[in-house]
Amino acid sequence: MKYKLDYLFISIIAFFCVFFVFNKITYNSDFIAYMGVVNGYDNNSEKAHEKTFSVLNETKNINEINLNSKEFIETMSKNEKAFEENLSFYKIRPLYTGLIFVFYKMGIPLILSIKLMTILPIFFLLLVLYFSMKKETKNSFISFVFLMFLIFSPLILKIATTTPDSLSSFLLLSLSIAYYYQKNMLLQCFLMILLISTRTDNFIWIFLLLMWDSFSYFSMKKIAVNMSVAFLLFIFCYGINVLAENGGLWIVYYNTLVNKLIYPLSQTPEFNFKDYFSGHIFALKYTFFTLFIIFIITILGYINFKKNPNKSIYVFNIVATTILSLFLRLILFPAYNSRYMLILFFIPIYFLVIDNKINIYNKIRYLPLFLKIKPILSSKKTPKN
Image 1 (cartoon, rainbow, N blue to C red):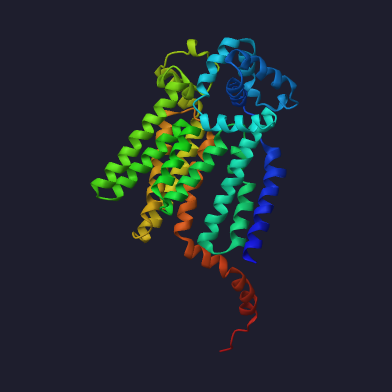
Image 2: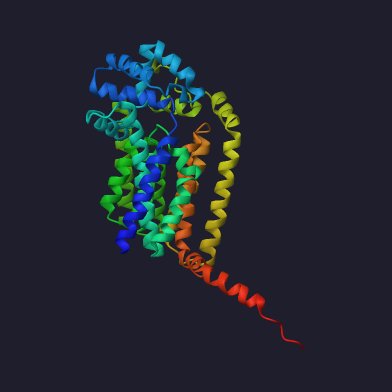
């Protein structure tokens, strides 16, 4: 019976993913470049430009693309060389573009393949959360209700865009859960490789997690293993950038900084501090919001571990990793897009809730009983003196 209930809830989640979230997917200008990368796998780079924009012109959804991206579309459609050089900044997502290519070779239209690589990771993200919640609460219904709220939340709707963000969010959550339950180290390393293959900047979060995990144990063996893994992952991350021929880390950093990848690789402006500070000023409201979230997470974490120092060290490491990662992203990437930050807001709060599952679950569990008894108590007459 309990497995039938799981199948029912998973089917409902899949239904909402297909008929609600799928129709909410937004088109980002980046998907044009990802189309170019995939077309480059199938053809030579010279034909990638022609094929990409022929497909783009045929789609009925061209008007749904973010209006801020019109400059990018115009630049890339008119300048074939700029388009080809620009693809180097998107080849550093080999897992994302590779999976799209697999769908495309199966006969699925290219734009639909990109949308599938948005919706499938969201479904698997919800699936992982469902079983994680069920493991903690021992209650399928509470897990299902939580996910239904999440489907309509800004987290899901924000990452439902034609970028690697949904895939990266799914893998980041999966790694956090694997680490929390201390699953096989090989599984964790595999997830780390997939994360970097999806977004190379995920190395920041991974390195910080390995660092905090090393500090949790006063063992030279643990430190040596973690730092060796971090070093190998850095080589892997650097190798992806080299193979993509994107001009080096400084050029990639500049384009990430200004958040405007419209420059041909050969004409990318040099980094200067004026752009750095103007990026901070432009993103000021996002900076204050992120600092506010960091403050909330820090307070919740402090209360959690102050009340009971024996709480899970793994939750502490995840929370500390995320807080430090958010700070570093604010400092290094002032123009960083907010949609990917939402999963970093969600993960520490989710694990802090898990760490207090007994108190929270008992309050939810006895709420119906309390509501039933309260009218009876209030109806009792007070004794006369």
